[in-house]
Image (cartoon, rainbow, N blue to C red; front, side, top):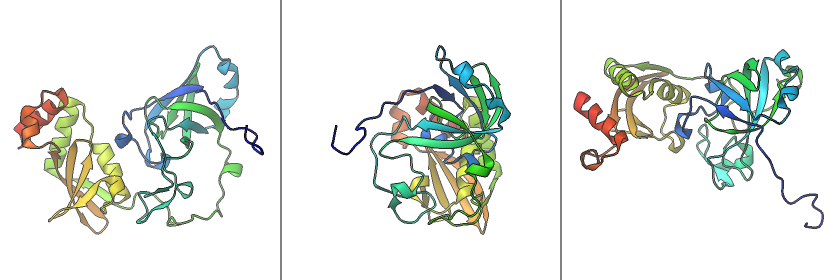
Length: 261
């Protein structure tokens, strides 16, 4: 042990895991307030006396969830947050790329059934290891006079209204009904925060309008003041890749192109 240090290493073990609709980082909300309505569960591990640890928690309607960013490797001392035009020190941001990738979210507690906590407004990726749970205490945890640092002090709610044009609506509905690929919610959520080009959101300007990259899909949209209109969806694959690949995922894109051009 190095002189002057109490410990050099800390070992953490999950108490359970989150089960949510978000299977990938690209689909997960960036903050709980953006995840309004998203439901999930926290499933605690058996044979650890957690049944007794949960006693009295049902008196609270919101809880803190401390978790591990298990999909992240490495960290960066300076990062480019989605609401910033320049890089910031990681300790001045909520970036998941941290020396110790520990996350903190407040979620609404709807019910407790055995070792399962049913929660709402969840922003965790499915399978996230949960390290601890604590009650949210309004008079202790909410500080109305706190400064907002480099962030705009105004309410960070959606600043843009997002509408879907008929073609984009038809395309998104077909992907959802025929292939269970959901684009309505993640595209609307992303563009409502801000449609300006930003590497974090994978938005770039085109000759006319803008294009959002969401995994393998491309979404064309235009902006008029505080209104965003989603015009069309396109595949992110090149024609030669569509023709050559036998990946079932690419097959969905081939079917999309055959239907919509």
